[in-house]
Image (cartoon, rainbow, N blue to C red; front, top):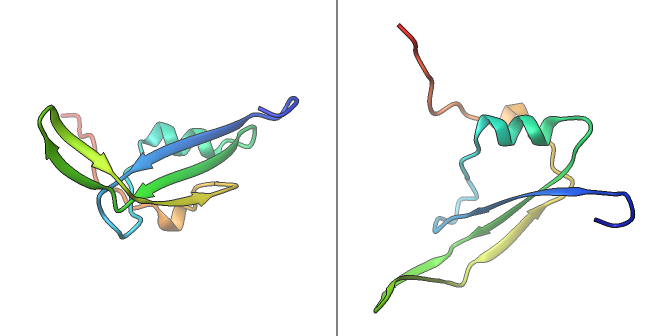
Length: 84
């Protein structure tokens, strides 16, 4: 927050390198709101190794989209809820 400006940052991490991340409908709706200034921070290419205490993540490359307003053409529906 700088003065009265608030930046809403959605943070995603992936071991993949294709810059495709999963977003919930609420994340998309929030970032699409005209009252919100949003950014999308993606850490991709994360390496995961097995350590003595469990998985250990390291590395990765940052991709920052700012400002971020979700583009409907880049959204792909991957799940639906069906009520009988």
